[in-house]
Image (cartoon, rainbow, N blue to C red; front, side):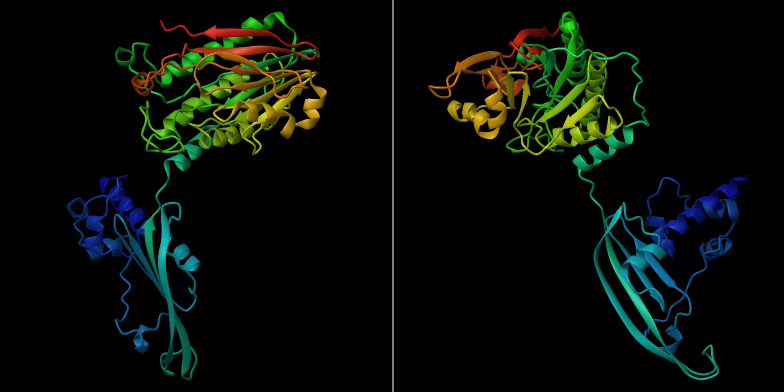
Length: 447
């Protein structure tokens, strides 16, 4: 193919997309594949109108007076005017009567443009016998549809979700030829407060650097270490907690849902999402080598919406895996019963402690009645802590177990003196008869 043919083909493709462009509009059009008029003339020797005729896009002239019989359109007359921040589409036809039809014939990409407003009008034109298709005067109805368009603004969160779904490969469940044991033991995997996307500079905080690369490394190492720690027990099920501030922010302004101020982040929201998604899938695959897994969504105050969207992606990713169950139901607090052990999940216990304790019998009375050992597992405070309270004088104690964070402190924590965090990931062994019988902590390696 000659250089002339390449240029004419590129010119023709652009006119297919942006129909009825004037010479001035073409010059203002910004497109990576657009040959300039100067380049086209140099290689073809053709003027603007000759170029349009050469590629089969002749100019359609329409009378300015819409009530003049010469303005009768016996074919579809379409004009398009595209600018950087707006566009207009005008059609005149006997058949195009709706906005949807106008957008279709003008080949408007509705993924990039949205309708701002529109006008539809019609008028009758009577043609004499010499101009009508039949040998007598005929009255026709012409329609004009004019549509004003604006570019669609893709929200960063929407863009992130699209990238996540697009990034999911076609996947078939891994065939595991071994049978999982049916025992009294379950493993609870609690990677709390990972804060993917947090940025910390060790020279400023005096407790080490933190970014997406470090977060992924520490996260996966803690999962692997806790799996190794638990290998002395025959595990028949794994409870995996998804959320609990897995991500540091959830909008393009690097803010939490409350949006009080912007945080220090490593990368834009789509990059944070993709990193968290990749690491989570790897962690789930590692757990599946041990036992069937139930993934429980418990949102944090940093990612209450973002972690939910991620849970939907994970649910779709493992939809054909019979050994994976995802519970991303609406309640932010959840509970599970394993034998006579009842464990409730929440992110923060900032309300009165007695209220939190009494939520177990209030919201899950049947599970409460079957349990002997009762606990709440909470995150948010970024430190390890265990407290024991008596909800009433007639009921046994409930343990509130504070799970530590997997991330180090950032400038905000340092400034406000929240410096108690010792980065670690934890896991717990459940027994159907004896409650929690083992508790493992995988401290991160900062080297």
